[in-house]
Image 1: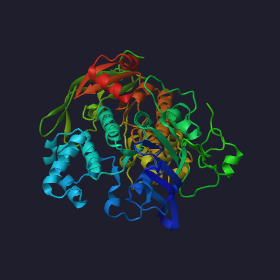
Image 2 (image 1 turned 135 degrees about the vertical axis):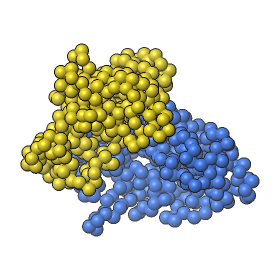
Image 3 (image 1 turned 60 degrees about the vertical axis):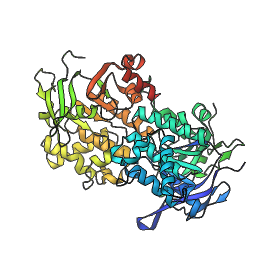
Image 4 (image 1 turned 90 degrees about the vertical axis):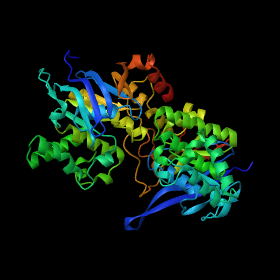
Length: 316
Length: 257
C-alpha cells in the first residue's frame, strides 16, 4: 500500500549570522499509512515543528522529497496540491484573522480554492464544517475574539478541514488549552480520524497526550528521528536511551519526586550549529561508550515500520 | 512544622479596579515553614491572581480589594503585609523566563540587582554574591555566563537565572507561578529537583501555582483547588488526588490521566 505521506532525505537548514547554518532537520525519512495518527515528540529545538511546516509546504526544505499519495510535491504547491496538507497551530488566537467573522473566513477559503461554486453553497458548507467540529452554526457570525480558547481551536481545525486535506499537521494544537478542554479537542481529533480517515501528524512535547491519541510515535533528537514504534510498545519498551530518559522525566500523578535518584537527563541538547561526529545523543546518554562518540549509528528498521538509531538499543 | 504559619491569607479579595468586578471572592489559607503548597485550577480560576496579590505584584487595573496577607518572615510572630515586603522575605519565580528577564541586560547585571539594591552590597560584593547564587542554582560555567545575554541561554538556564535572582534577598517564601510550564519534561524535571533541593537546603516555604496535577503530585505537601475565584477543596496532596470530594477536582484529575 502506498503511504499517504512519504518524506525522503529531508533536510532543513536556517542560515544564521557569520555564514553558518543551523541544521533543524537532518536527512529525515518518514512515511505514514492512511488513517493513522503519528505523534512527533522531542524537546524544544529538536526540529519537529520545522519538519511539520515543511511537510505542510509553508516552508521549503534545503533538499529532500515529499510525496502525497505517491505523487511528489513541488517546492511551490499550486492548485489542488496546496490543499493536500493543512496545519492546526498552537495558538488559534493568532492563527485566525481577527477582522473576519468565522463565516466570512470559511467562505473565503472555500471560494478561493473552488471547493464550492457560489456563496450559498459556501455558507451551507461552512455550517457543516462547524457541525463536524462540534460547534453551533451560530458561531459563524462571531469573530475570533468572541470565542473561548477551546472554540477557537475547534475553528482552527474546521479551517483546516475546509480544504479537504489528505494530511493534517497539528503543531502543539492542544498545548495552550486547559486540561478539560484539551481532553475534548483530543477526542475531536480522534473522531475526525475515524469519520474521515484523515491522516494526522501530531506534534507535541506532551507525552501523556501523545499516548492517549497516537497510533505510532516518532521521537526526534537534534534534527533526526531516533526511534519510532507503535505507541504502546514505545511507552512500555523504549529502545532508544533518549526515549527512555524522556519517559522517566515525565511526572505522573501518585509519584513523588525522588531527590536521591539521578535526573533522567542532564543539561541541554548540544548546539544544532556545530554538529559533531558520532551519535547526537552521545553527550547526554547514560550508556555512552567510545564508538558512540566517533560513529553515528545507522537507523535499524524492521518490517512493521519500527526504527531505532542507536548502537546499543535497550532491551526490556 | 511550627504552629504559627509563615504566611496567612485571610478573606483575600481581588477585583478589577474599574468595573469593580470581583475575581477572587474572599479566600483563606495558611502556609507553614518548610511546606510546599500547590495552588491549582484552570485558566481564570484566580490562582495566579492569588499568588501575585501575596507579594503585591498584581497586573495593572487589578487590585486587592480586601483581606489580609500576613507574612511572618522570621517566625517571631511579628507579621507584615506581603505587599509591603517588596522582595524582602518573599520572592517570585515567573513562568516565562524569556519575557521576565530584561533582554537588554547581561545575566550578571540581572542577578546583581537584588544584592545591590535590596541588600545594599558594594559592586564587588554583589558580584561575588551573584556568582555564588548562580553556582547554587546549578548554572555551569557561571563566571562566563555573567557576560551572556538572556537570549543566548536555553529555557532551562534562563529559569535557573530567574531562580538565582529570586534567591538574591534570601527569601523565606518562594512564590512560583507555573515555573516549569514553558519547559520540556526533561528540563522540568531538573528545575523541580532544583526547587526542592533549595527548599531543603534553605528551609524555604513554597507556594506553587500550576495547572499540572502530576507536578503537584511530585512536589506538593498540600494542595488547594480553585475554581472561579473560590477555593473548592484543599487538603493533603495524597488525599486530594486519591479521593477528591469535589466534582471540579475530580474532572481535573480525570482529564490529567
